[in-house]
Length: 189
Image 1 (cartoon, rainbow, N blue to C red):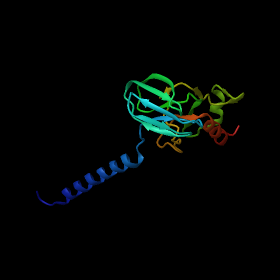
Image 2 (cartoon, rainbow, N blue to C red; image 1 turned 90 degrees about the vertical axis):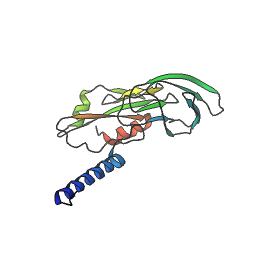
Image 3 (cartoon, rainbow, N blue to C red; image 1 turned 180 degrees about the vertical axis):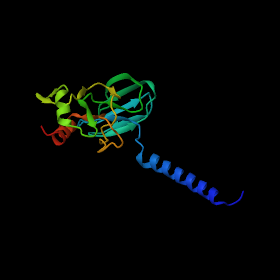
Image 4 (spheres, helix red, strand yellow; image 1 turned 90 degrees about the horizontal axis):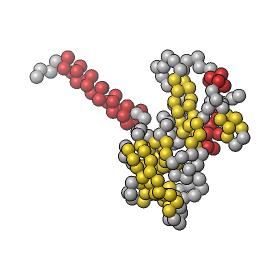
């Protein structure tokens, strides 16, 4: 094989291509995972699919491995007394286990050019939280498992989504108090 300029160009192009994909997958790609979340001041012990015992402290989120399909969980209090033994179905690539059955809200944030977010939110339904109305129709959730969101509790919304020419949206799941703080900071009615 002769050392020609076109061969050098091809090798440089292949190297740049590999480096670009490496940077994307290491730093830019959104990671998909499942979380067990505990917004309470209590500590819980749990086993998923009869695996090893896990512990989750107050205010902590822990990444766990789940199988697509049916999964089971046993939850114990800080004295290792069984609280419940339950099963849930996993269909998507990210999800949240609400170990303490606390209140969460799934919010939809809109992106796009010339977006008037306040007028858009005013036409959506309202949700009442602690006797106060909140615009934007956040979905209340307090069951054991959900996967109806794009961003998990430990992730932030993207500040900007590039290359969109229409209005798009992304959903994020919030702990109740985190949602109230986000709403107060982000929306100015």
